[in-house]
Image (cartoon, rainbow, N blue to C red; front, side, top):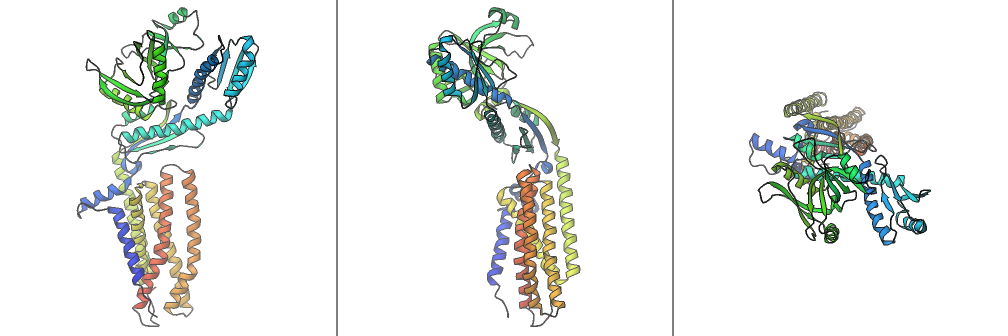
Amino acid sequence: MRKNLTGKTVLIFATLLVFVYGIFGIPSGFNGAALKGALTNRIHLGLDLRGGTHLILQVMVPEAVGATADNDVTRLQSDLRDANVTGAVPTRPDPARPDVVKVLNVPADKDGAVRSMLDDHYGQQYDISSNADNSFTLTMKPSVVRDIEQRALAQSIETIRDRVDRLGVSEPVIEEYGPGRDQILVELPGVDDPARVKDIIQSTARLEIHEVLGGPYPDPQSATQANGGSTPPDGELMKAFDQSSDSGQYYMLRRSAIVAGSDFRDAQPSVDVNQRPDVNFVLTRAGGDRFYQFTSTNIGKSMAIVLDNSVREVATIQGAIRDQGQISGGGFTKDTAENLSLMLRTGALPASIHFLEERTVGPSLGADSIRQGVIAAVAGMLAVMAFMLIYYRGAGLNADLALALNLVILLGFMGFTGSTLTLPGIAGVILTIGMGVDSNVLIFERIREEMHAGKSASAAVDQGFGHAWLTIVDTHVTTIVSAAILFLFGTGPVRGFAVTLTFGLLANLFTAVFVSRVIFDAILNRKQRGEAISI
């Protein structure tokens, strides 16, 4: 009985057209150059094919813990004032222990009130203990420390991604590398200025405004002598930026910043009255309110603009300032002013970055990888197609058509999703070809067995596809599970391999079973009852 295959044939051709569009889109022309341009616009090349920069970064997460403790020191100062506790000094005494805060010089008659306030406001975050010298020690709980470290890593990834995106790097890979190591993998295909990108990624661009307690001093010894022979508990000695020499001036600043980091809403490069590059910044509403409160109550005093742990500018407060300011006189060039503006707009990194690995892949190596990968894929596919034609004769042509459609669907999927093609991705394509051939071999051998048992061609085809179907599904599902594990626990190119392999296998279920069966049915429709098929 002849089968009506019109609907199935229309579905196959519609699928073919859809995925061909996924590969090329609407090209500007149909010559070789136009089609190649359309192809590369839809399917992006990864680092190993296009060339670029590969980096592995270590996020120094203890610095984020220390920054949180510094913010809590500022909160403690406010809470102690509200509780009318005079003379008590909150501080972070040991730089090597960023998770420890101390409250010193607590009056004996306020001991109970301070303990109650600490338990109420900080008990969920810190383990609190009292000491014999009228002080309290607050030790950050391990779960809180790890949560801060994880948030610092996540924020670092998002900040670096934002900076790289604004530089116009296409298809970058920015993700956690090695869970639990606080490391980030950065791959930047086609980067033509890796030095600038590396500088922008590395800089914490931590801009802060601090109250000036004293200075300038010619050296640290002078600063210490001027403050009674030691640094105040809430003070911090910091050097002024001087790009012309190693010597310079020093300022004693209050450790806690007035505004910092996320308080900056916008920043743009500009020039001052002398046409020298500078940076204009705008604060958030909350940051502006704090800045206004400080400047309005400290007119005539000095404040310091600090960038990356060096004093860039010291200004006398002439009047209340709410939400806008300017950084000038810092030895900016046009490029450094633009870089600083970019980093402030994208937010400061919560901690500094150390480069563990840096590798550059040249465009010539990438072009060679493309050539060798394409040669391997084409040679493998031609060899497989030739084998199928020789061994299975007419049915081999059926398998070759299904195989070609499988490749079109896979490349179309990559074009629709904007996937990045890497060498492991090409390996996934080649493996998909192998799995596709394996499926056809299972079906064809089963058909041969049924024909050798004396069944007609039509019955052999029905039995061949029916019995081979479960085996094909079993092999594909187990491979897809393996690919899913690679995707969950792998990084970068390994994930690309897993995605390519998974969708290739799903496409193969369509081509090896549905398309191949339609082709067999079309052949049977053209033959007389009882006539054999070429297999």
